[in-house]
Image (cartoon, rainbow, N blue to C red; front, side, top):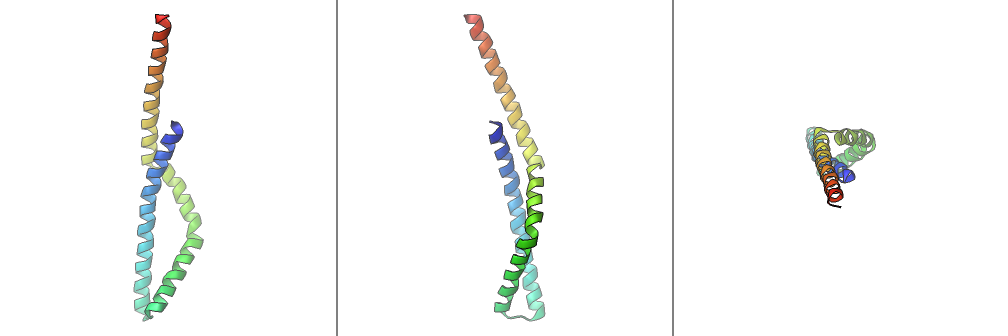
Length: 107
């Protein structure tokens, strides 16, 4: 059960992080578009600039992103879900112990 709690927390954090990642990529494409217009480049050159910008970001941003995902794993959402699962597991554990005691008393 605790593995499941960890997966739920990580998925919540990564989903939030992936939305931030998508937003950041869109902002970068917009910035490159404005730069392309300012430099007076053609649409074909714009796609070249965007392509090489994304490749550059992927090459050098990969390590930064990897670190940010690790940070997201320890985010508030993850810790809150983890605490909820711990509480639930403790309640179930106490119920099981109570049932064992009751069954032993009935014997």
